[in-house]
Structure formats: structure tokens, C-alpha cells
Length: 140
Image 1 (tube, rainbow, N blue to C red):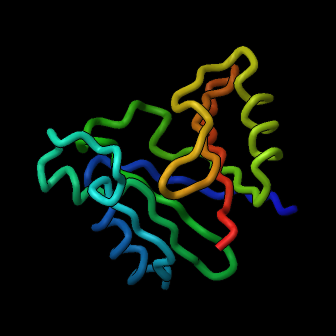
Image 2 (image 1 turned 45 degrees about the vertical axis):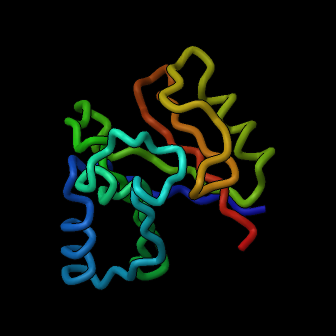
Image 3 (image 1 turned 60 degrees about the horizontal axis):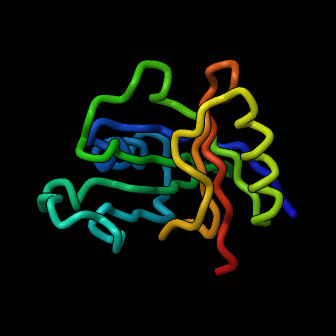
């Protein structure tokens, strides 16, 4: 079982632009980009522009990774949440234990569960105001 900590950059509708910038500026390599339109449970009310926003992206930078997401609808990111910490594991139960431990006296921003980009994912702000995204790597 592995556990990694990765910076997760939350953007206000310009994640693709940021990804292209980091490709050029620091030699980042795109590993994954999933748009909101790629996610089956997105409401039909989403316009094509909103469907093209990045729901989840992963880049390799040297031996490390950066993750990105656009706020749904390109909305404003709350101060202090532009950069969060992503804890990645390859074990659903380990991810669940981490999520449950961090939520004690904290706030759940997205309940822990399966998503189109992870078999087990959740977003929580701990009692110190630090936001963590718990990401489980899929088997493939």
C-alpha cells in the first residue's frame, strides 16, 4: 500500500490554461484530464462551456504530481482553498480511515465515495482549516 501527498490546485475556470502553462514552464506531462461533461451524473442544465471545464486532471512533474480542478461552473474559489492537499492511496479502506480521521471536528465538503475518476474520493476541511482531498488510485 502506498500513501502520497500531492498539491491540488483549484481553479476558477482556467485549469486548461494553467495546465498548458505548466507543461511549458516546468515540463509537466498530462496524465489525465476528465471534464465535467465526461461525468455521467452532470445535470442537463450545464452549458457546453461548463461541460468543458476540468473536473479532475493529473500532471507528472519530474517524480512528483500536481492535480487540478475547475470549480463547478467556474465559480469563485473560497480564500484558503485555491491549493489543497491531496492524500492518495491505492487502498479504499486506508483512504476511508484517513478521511474519517480528518473529519473529526472538521467539515465534510464532499462525502467519501466512488466518483468517475476514483473508486473512493472525498474532500474534507479539518479542525485546523486545512482542506484535504482523499484520492484512491484505481487498479488500472
